[in-house]
Length: 419
Image (cartoon, rainbow, N blue to C red; front, side, top):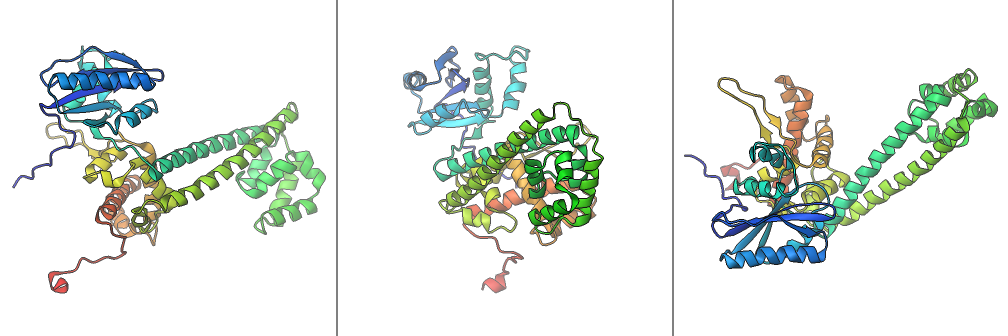
């Protein structure tokens, strides 16, 4: 028997007014379309309270004039410009929010007038076309602790990116005035390397320190991890350094700034992770996600923040699309294309799941056995890890849906056992 798909929550019927918005930094462009095809001209309105009220009054008065019962407001799921308007509309009676993928808008607009022309007045009409075709996505606006987790996760991710950029910048500077330092110390993120760069940054500083004092200092700072042979190698490399001296004082000034900034970044990352733990305690279903081995507070906080609220989604396919982990293939005739993930979703969510997959496939991980079977069948490692990411998302969704914690090596009881 053919399985009938459930009705989509954003399905359009004869009693629905479609209103769309193309967001901008200072000005939005709105548009509305009635079920009988009647539509309005593109309506520009300011990105402020009075502009929002003007747009709301326009679409509600149109809905009343045509005897329509509901208004669907759609917009592209990109950028921060639409967040204030979404917050303004979410609690309005008779208004339902949906979002469309920007990739869909880009492709469909080429069919409108056979041109890839992008304008603020054209985009809202294209968004309405996508909604009519039934390709809109559920909008879940994070509230309370979930909203805090989204901001914390995004802030932490931006800080880590900035920190990495600074470390790369510092390596470039060292390559100029002290290239041997990188060859001996290898990792400039360690406490030992950063201590030397802060107090003894130049080859001459290390030579003046002396081999014995250098060995004692490194042994103390590294807590015994750096031995005398490595200290001797750094001392000899400093004596024979080929680093430039012209402009070195300016580079040292920049190094000091980078080191101070990295310290502040590390403090922010530590504080944000501690705040994540506190916010997770206020979300009841977070404990079922944390019960899954390999999922820590940072991953759980990031997933909840990106999803908004797992309980607001009716099916796992909606969450898969949100993450961009839904599958597709390109086939024609006898040719059968390979299954790939769409990547048309939240990239940070995919990153968090991929990192969780790396933990899950370890020797004692929850997906180790499945991963090894997949590799033995010839599946490539990257593809297998993506598959594990999908499985983890399905498992998390099921745990939240069923209000149950993860039980390792769970065996479903037979009918006799149940009896």
